[in-house]
Image (cartoon, rainbow, N blue to C red; front, top):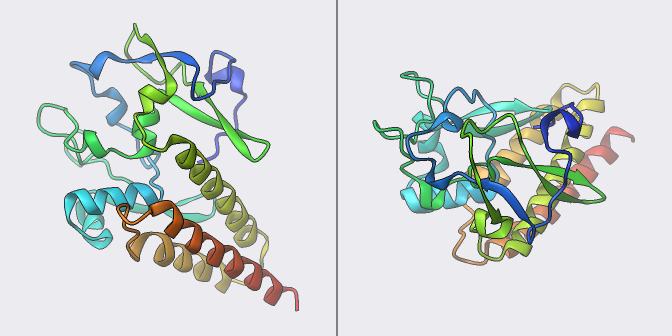
Length: 228
C-alpha cells in the first residue's frame, strides 16, 4: 500500500539496513495490542504470508477467506489482508486476552512493525514509523534480529521483486481503457500466487521465482495485445 507522505512526516528521518541497530524492541508488547486493532484493510498479505498461514493452520486460502482474511483493492490490484473482527475491531487472530495466536508464523508486516519499508533504486531500506507504536519506551535491537526471518537476504530480494511486480500490474490496469483487463490481471494474480498453493517447505523462493517469471510474461503479453 503506497503512502503519499514525506519520510520526515512519519519517521525519524533515517533509513536503516538489516544490520543496523534501531529503537523498535517493544519488549513482547505486554499488556498492549494496539497495533492489532483498528487497522482496517492495511495489513496486506503477500504470497509467502499465505503459504505460511495455510501450512501452519492446515487450511486452504479459501477457508481463510471465511473469517480470517479478506480481499480488497490495493492501488488497483486485488490483494488479501488480515480481517478485523466485528467484536472489538481487532485482528481475527487475537485471542480473548489480546494475544496473537499465530505469533510464531505471523505475516511479514506484523514482524516488521513498527518498522516500514522505503523503496528506492530497485531495493528498499527500513524506517521507524514514529507515530504508529503506542508503547512509550522501546529498546534498541539489530533489525535482522527483530525480524527473526531465516534467509533474510533472500526474503528481502523476494519482497523487492513482489513490490515492483505489483507496480507493473498497477500500471497496466491503470492505463488501459479495456474494462476486461483489470479483471483478467487480478484473477491471474490471485490464482497464480494465492489460491494455487506455494509450499514454503519445498524451496519457496525457487517456486516463487518460477511463477513470477510466468506472471511477468503474462503482463507483457497482455500489454502487447492491447497495443496491436
